[in-house]
Amino acid sequence: EIVLTQSPGTLSLSPGESATLFCRASQSISSSYLAWYQQKPGQAPRLLISGTSSRATGIADRFSGSGSGTEFTLTISRLEPEDFAVYYCHQYDSSSTFGQGTKVEIK
Amino acid sequence: EVQLVESGGGLVKPGGSLRLACAASGFSFTSYSINWVRQAPGKGLEWVSSVSGSGSYVFYADSVKGRFTISRDNAKKSVYLQMNSLRVEDTAVYYCARAPVAGTHTHFDYWGQGSLVTVSS
Image (cartoon, rainbow over all chains, first blue to last red; front, top):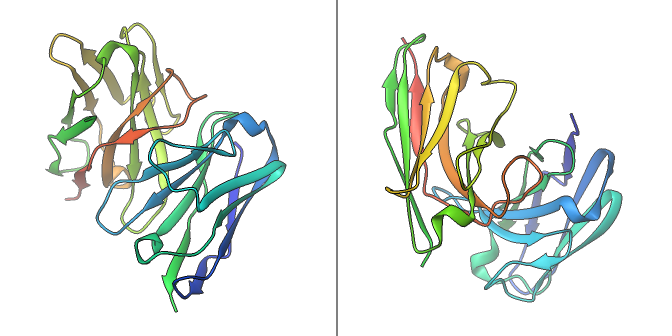
């Protein structure tokens, strides 16, 4: 099973700042099979990015994804108040597994 | 508007059974696979099961294989998860989620709000 390790566990930032979230895989993943989701308390996850860098329908362009192999990144530029949430990476190259999440909280 | 609405969750004793339902609307139902993904309290996400658009192909995580059965009724635009021999570790919010393809090689583009299953004596 491919294990995804997200870092940091918590990111404390202010609105307007940029956030960089990391997702490391225990083995190489095709860049076609890496996604990112946002989850707010009491809500379902929402797809942000699929295929490492393709934004989902309706997702603001301040969200961007990059990476390859075992290292992937989600960048949120100019944090808006509604961006404070937990973010999960998800690999679907070999079976389907999720990272443990990164919480982006207001500083 | 794409909508997925889960129902059927509740409290059940270990060894018991429960059937979850997911009602879909707002898209061409048979063109998409429907998956169940669960989240234990305070924990991360775990893919559970997938059914293809036709219902001909089903897939399960090892943790539920032999205990859970996924099915769909395309006339009713609904997907079901029959959960038998439930264990305490099955306690979670169960989400149904839409995917472009069946199986595990896919992301999930729309999710329901979830249904809580609690397994406890």
